[in-house]
Each structure stands twice: as structure tokens, then as C-alpha cells.
Amino acid sequence: SVTISQPGSYTLQLTCSNPGGAPNSLISPPLAITVVGAPPSPPTSTDGLTLAAYPAAPTMAVPFPISWNVANASTCTGMVTAGTAANVTGWTTLSTVTSPRTVTISQAGNYTLQLTCANTGGSITSPPLQLVVSPLSACAGAPAVLTRILTTSVFYGAYTTPVRAGVDTTEWDNIWGHYSTTDTSLPWPGRQGSAPTLKNFVRTNFLAAHFRTGASSPTKTGAFTFPYNIAAPMIDMTVSTTCGSFTNASAGCIRSASGAGDNLLTWTFATTNQSKCILQANTDYYLNVKYDDPNEVTVACVAGSQACALPTLHNYTN
Image (cartoon, rainbow, N blue to C red; front, side, top):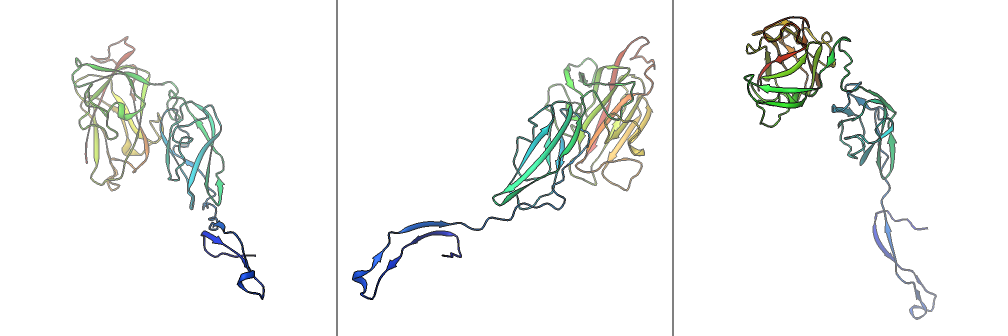
């Protein structure tokens, strides 16, 4: 029995002899061996590799993060063990150990996700994560009598300017990420001074535009204004972690019955100003907007018209 204490490549030989000496010795052919080190300990997790999704009830086609805690792993492979879509972008397509992952599920339905993290010494698999993925048109907190607007035409500035048609209005970047109809999109907080107007905003529509904040900055602040250029009906606006909710938000993140020229709401990361809408870093929110009174008649939204326009102006400082 032979014990080698260090890994590496070795060449062994054996010499057998008797009292007669070297002329009568036998030497074996060389034996080349490779000694490998002991395997590492399997991956560990302080919480059993429990997966956490935010929001817990995501919306189809809207990216959301899934996080976990693991140590001593070289790969982490995501699996969909039950669900409409077997492949999930950002989950089944990656094997990195870095948490969180930004995941996008393309189809609504019930899903069960798991994660296996491994190294050469073994593996650990998470408990199942149950997700109910809502269709784009559905928002958990929305008034039942309203319908979420998913696409429309958007123009910037004067009403006669060209429009961007077929804009996906479920994402902030597609609306306030632009300043004109020809520029490229910027992520939240978007482009400074963006003044989009959503055309064909049905009286019973509501807007729920998803965005994700970046790193916290005490000096970063922004404000929405209801511009004068279009005499649209008064609006209600919230910034909430709940899609379509006009009540589930802090007091500074709710504005009701605001009209042309009004300041709507001001957001900030500074927690000392309770009169403003205080945002948390690296968090998912929805900007929710609806007409305060769907039956209100204005110059730009005359009696009998079912679809009007929704103007906003957003400014911010870094």
C-alpha cells in the first residue's frame, strides 16, 4: 500500500535484488501515474439555497430578479421543472454562480423553478420556487373596471410632430427613455425633459410602466408635471411596487385629480423628505396613471370621444 501526500505526476519503478548484488537485480519498467488532489467540499448555502423572486408575482415579458445564497460553487444551473415555457431567458440560459439573475418569462402561467449549484465535490439543489406569471394585460392591483394599455402611438413636444407607432407602453424606457421620435432609448430615469404624449388613451385605460431603479444617490431627484400643451382630463398617478395600484404606495408617491400645469409627484432617494416619493435603490416599480374621471369633458377630450391623449413631462437631476 502506497501513500503519496502531494498531487502531481509521478514515475515509479521497483528494484528487486538478492544477496548476490546488482548483477542479479530486476528493475521494473517505469510506471507513470497522476495523483489528483482530494475533491473540494460540496457547495453550501446558509438557507438551503432558497430562491427569492421580486416581485413574487411577475408579469410576462417583464424582466425581474431571482436571488440566492451559495458558497463554494463553480456552476449554478437553472431549471424549469413545471411551466408553459421550458426555456426561460436568464435562468435556463446561464450557469454562472453570481446572484441575482435577471429573468424574463415570455408566457403567462404557473411555473416551478429550481437551481442546482455544483463543483467537482458535489452539488446542492434549491427547494422549488412557485411563480404565477401574469399576462401583460393583467396587473394585480389594478381597478377591475380599467384595462391596461399595452401599445399606442407616442409623440414628443408639439402635437403635430411625427409619432412613434406601436410603442410598448408596459416599460418606462420605451416612453420616457426618449426625447424625440428618432433618438435611442435610455434606461431609467430616461432622457432629461422627456415630454411624451400617449395618443389613443381610452377613457377606461390605465398605464402601468415598469422601471427598475439603479444605485442610490442622495442628490438624484426627478419630477413629473402635467403640461399645458394638451387640455386632457385630470389624472391620478402613483409610483408603486404593485402593477396598476393607485392605493398601494406611500403618501408621497400618490397624486390624485391633477390637471394641466400641476406638479404631479417628485421622487428622490433622500429618506429625510417625507413629502416626496422616496425610492429604494435597485428596486422594481410601476408608474401607474389613469384619468381621475373617465367621463370628464375637455377641449382635447370632447363629449362622446372614447380615446383621448395622456401628456406628461419628466425632469430629473443627478
